[in-house]
Amino acid sequence: MATGSRDTDHHHSHRRPFATDGELKVETLGKKVDKSAPIETFWELREMRKEEFLSNGTALSSSSGSKSTEDKEGGVCRNDFPPDFVFGVATSAYQIEGGANEGGKGPSIWDAFTHIPGTTLDGSNGDVAVDHYHRYKEDIELISKLGFGAYRFSLSWSRILPDGTGDRVNDEGVAFYNNLINSLLEKGIEPYVTLYHWDLPLHLQEALDGWLSKDIVKYFAKYADVCFESFGDRVKNWITINEPLQTAINGHDSGIFAPGKCEKPKTEPYLASHHQILAHSAAVSVYRRKYKEKQKGQIGLVVDCEWAEANSNTPENKAAAARRLDFQLGWYLHPLYYGEYPSSMREILGDQLPEFTNEEKQELLQNSMDFIGLNHYTSRFITHAPDSDEPSYYYRAQAMKRIEEWEGGEPIGERAASDWLYVCPWGLRKVLNYMAKTYNSPKIYITENGMDDEERDAPLEEMLDDKLRVRYFKGYLSSVAAAIRDGVNVKGYFAWSLLDNFEWAQGYTKRFGIVYVDYKNGVLSRHPKSSAYWFLRFLKGGGDGEGKDTKQD
Image (tube, rainbow, N blue to C red; front, side):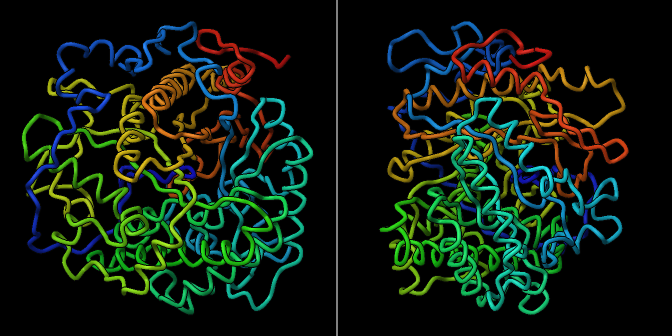
């Protein structure tokens, strides 16, 4: 999501209409089970270890033979991770910056979309957001005091190039990000910078039809070039695009995200994704050709994935779970590692899925990525369902149904505020092992992981005491530590999010921050939650119970 992204239409209670779909071809052959895998499948553990999963959210065994992470005081500690492991927090431009009409910024599709009645649950927008544009020094001070060594944020394309084309660079926008980057480095905080987190310049949407036009690829490459030239002497960690899946599905199928398109769900999401993949490759090519040797940085792509666990040990359900992973990770990573979309997608979608030319395939493989960023929040049981009633064409095409409950009706984990987000840390270890096996042990960063609280009228002290979020982070970090012991090359972890913020179509009704933002009367004051203090102790090498605290040291 940055926040709000999740690969699901469960984010929002309101829906836009979508076209009905026709008959679909479905692959029913499952993938072979790897008997050397370090983790047992969930249905094998269901009866024997159900209570363990439900009580602490993880049932992980140590492959190293040492005392397992989950047996330690506090569940997990800093020493469970390598000394050079990166710990950070994450945000995105539209969700926190505000300053929508300041500093020479041009409008983005989200600036326009949120001013259409009914597009956000509470009728809000990101014009002010949490005013990071004016308070960035205060926010950097928070990051520093909490002990994080890295900060992932996104650049607003239209703040740097107001119409998106590159014909005019906005010096005020460049200066803002220079000041932000310099302030981070002064505090010893490493910037991890995302070029695109969904806020496409409005001009490119209106003039080209946005990601549906192949011309967008050259404009993205020009934008990337400006950013590398302007900031690359100090920024050594680049992300091209955040969660292209969400732009494709929520932006071009269900229509609940900008640009709000839902008329052609059988073709437009796949075209939008196709061009995002090509745009990523073009930006990587620019970086490696012009900047990498001198700037010595790395560049990657961020994808999002819920773990898909077969609901039972049947070939049909295992095949459905495999399709689910192909339609999440494989859609973007297969072209960049193998030059082709997953065969399951091609068999189901046919010519609805665009083709890469031979030249493009070669460029994709040459300009793949230095690392994969993974955004992960939750997991699902998957069952084969040829007549799926899932809410959009993308999901129905997979002929599967996502299930959030055990067979007896008990939830898969504690539910957060959002109806799609359940606390089940075991899934993160499984996703990481799957990625390592499928994509030849790539370098991986967890670029988003977190959960939300409901916005409600409650005393501040109550809002700051986020015990479930503390348990969430402890469980998921235990899962990351276990994956590292399994041999997965995980290099860093970014909590989502630093601040409560604008949560896309949910507006300000959901709070993902480890720092509470007081929205009342536009005050926007910052108040660290218990989870923030838990991270402070964790990063110092400590940890205690639920992490509640009242003030910093």
